Image 1 (cartoon, rainbow, N blue to C red):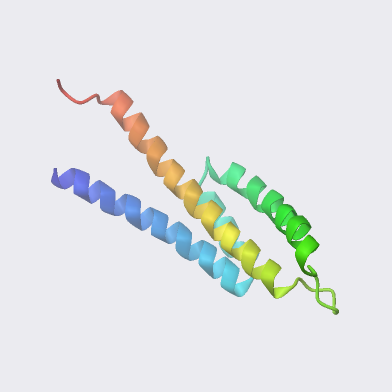
Image 2 (cartoon, rainbow, N blue to C red):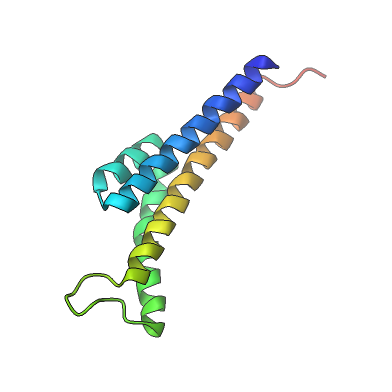
Length: 115
């Protein structure tokens, strides 16, 4: 039982670390933080990265129908920057959670509970 709680703590710290890296990437606009988060979330980091780029395009396309997607100087509008940063964090944390679920599923298959 204590080992299970310890494992849950490690899983929680893992998800929190990925979330922290993604938030740092969003706040500082640095690709390095995002890449570290993607590397930590492999194998689910790959589809998350694809969805990051696809999600940006969808946000820009759909949101651009309602509000300008760019400022006069050519940079992204504030709503687009905030929306894409939020999407990036959510997708990377989701990938970390998916990895935790995959690990638990694999562990249950290898060590079934006694009946």
